[in-house]
Image 1 (cartoon, rainbow, N blue to C red):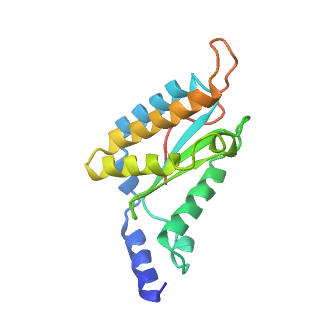
Image 2: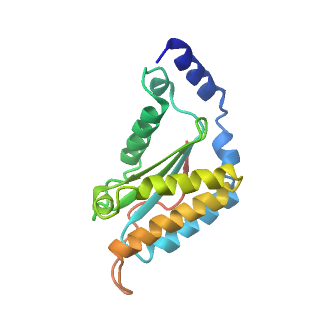
Amino acid sequence: MGMWTRLTRVLKHRWQSERAAERAMPPALLAKLAAQVAGSEAGHSGEIRIYVEAGLPLRYLWRPVSTAQITRERALAMFGKLRVWDTAQNNGVLIYLLLAERRIEIVADRGLNERVAPGTWSQLVDEMRAAFKAGDFEGGLARAVHEVSTLLQRHFAVSAGTHNPNELPNEPVLG
């Protein structure tokens, strides 16, 4: 990867306003998604987090690796930072959006990941990308939460009356 490509990437990310994530995720959408996650988590023991980032920190941008690799590394880092890995049944899922690159990553902990078909996450990312491209940002995110919830319900359902603590916050995080 050449210096010009890296410089272009740095400028693209630095050009992104800190408020780009706030514009993409207005308070009403944040509240709606938080409620959807909370409702979902009442039926299973998994945890769902959403992280939307306008642009990457500089330390990620100058590295001579592909944008796809950098985005995946950042999603994995946020998976750890947001403690999505720290659930009792190892069944947390992070939906990560990087606005500057229009990239989406889904990171699932091993408890769920080992139970789903290999192409499940890439198919869900493709569906989200298509919805976003069609201008349906809210619908794409809502459908992604629904699909992740369906998988968690299938593999980690809890019975009514079973103790099911909310291990992580439900609100999307903006970076």
